Length: 223
Ligand SMILES: O=C(CO)[C@@H](O)[C@H](O)COP(=O)(O)O
Ligand SMILES: [Co+2]
Image (cartoon, rainbow, N blue to C red; front, side, top):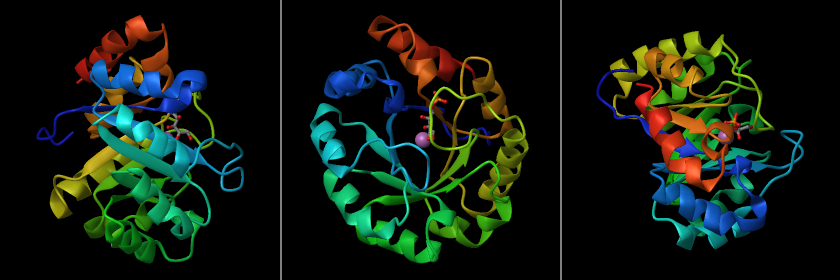
């Protein structure tokens, strides 16, 4: 990491108990989460279906933390306003999901949210450069999108290092988020490579509610 930004922890509610989502969001907020990471999947861009804007709207009153909405859907533009109105603070999308990523970034800002760009493990880092000055967050996927509980893909550490250098030169202060397979062993390496936001589903929610604060503190302490 550049040494300036404090580490932020973004529990992915994909790993929470969906039968009591509101209570889970309150619990991770109280346990010290910085962002609430919401994985939105459409069964088309990725092979899984999760939640939509109505669920974000229902969860919004349960936490004042930043709602970090990760869209794994195609098309994207059609749904931006709905997610922003529902209370998304950050909206990230994948450049492969539509033909005009710059237009999508503008639409996210126009809707009042902060735009983020998500790079799949197989997406070349060059796709980011023309857009780096226009976004507030880079999301590096360290698993293929679609499911929680997968293993960290090591090759993404190099990508994080390259992006960190460029962020510090061109748009310092924006978030560099790593998402997928983050646990007590991979977290310190992702931070050392330059990430300052750690998405963690399995690693946050394991052990039940009594363990959430300890899990979050351990991940944060990995720095
Ligand atoms: O976006 C995704 C998966 O597509 C992630 O946000 C996962 O939900 C993270 O889960 P863990 O790997 O931490 O269990
Ligand atoms: Co995610």
